[in-house]
Image 1: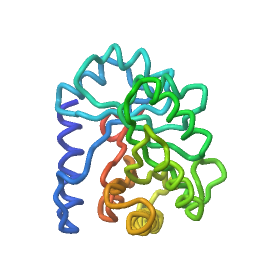
Image 2 (image 1 turned 120 degrees about the horizontal axis):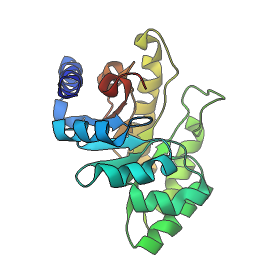
Image 3 (image 1 turned 90 degrees about the vertical axis):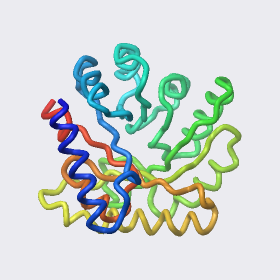
Image 4 (image 1 turned 45 degrees about the horizontal axis):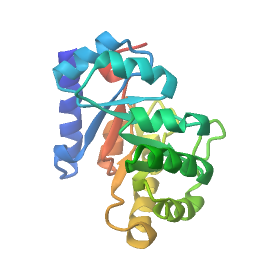
Length: 224
């Protein structure tokens, strides 16, 4: 596990340095979907400090089993009836894609008396099988989330199409960065700085295009 972790960290550093970025500006999130708690704990012991889960229910027992230390990110689609569970288990939510979900999370966060950092999920490529807003709808939702008392919008997230050549999805990452920049200069403000984009097959290209968070599963944990 340690060797895999160090190899991914090195790849992140090389990608950042190619475009003159500080490698420390990129947060590595280990995606633990389908990975048992013992292997996750090995990764944490190797130095991994941020973990991502796709499903709230799968995360509940795993978070308890892994124990204290890492920060947990919800990176999969969130249903309204899971908002309270999500607020209670995750430090960051990456996948807000509707006002109804935002309002549910805001209510749950109010009950917990905590402010929750959130990212807005954008379906840049317009894939019918993926969640996320259209780029044109993002500004309205960001404005509405800013009005929520307990939500802190910190940036955008996207899932790029699967591609054999990561260069083919570079425009997706570039468009998300441009959208983030427009929102930051307009409705969202300077704190709206995060870009959660890039996975095992394309994270180096995503970093070159400005990713501040990369979500890595297979490259860290192998095939499920």
